[in-house]
Length: 124
Image 1 (cartoon, rainbow, N blue to C red):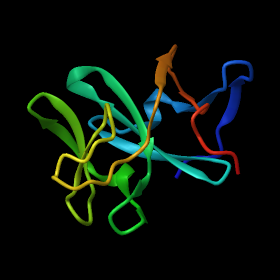
Image 2: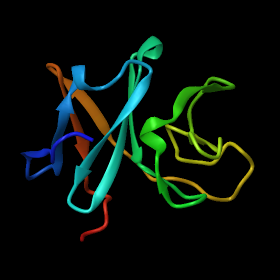
Image 3: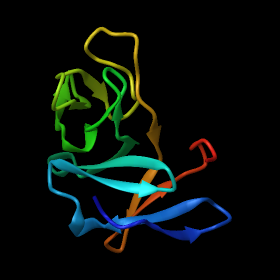
Image 4: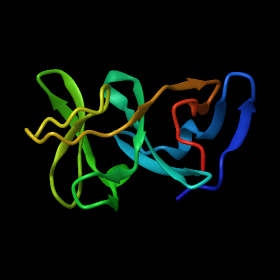
């Protein structure tokens, strides 16, 4: 797990989560913001960044950042490493037929830094 991220722009509620080089290509890392764990993924061949909650809703395990990423019908997805439930990285919808879903967050990479918008995180 990476260190606690620093606030980037207080007005826009974007936080500096990590350096782009800290994120495994075609994989993920976890950052902690307050009491929240956020999974960050870099889908190398698509050159796309995604941020989701790290907790898998199936068994409440903090594991999604260690999941495998890929696509299903061109939809970017992550599979929980424990249960193999798959979730859309774009929408959070479960792609395994279950009714559960995960939260997704706006993310951007600028000048080698990765930022997450935390406006939709519950206050803790």
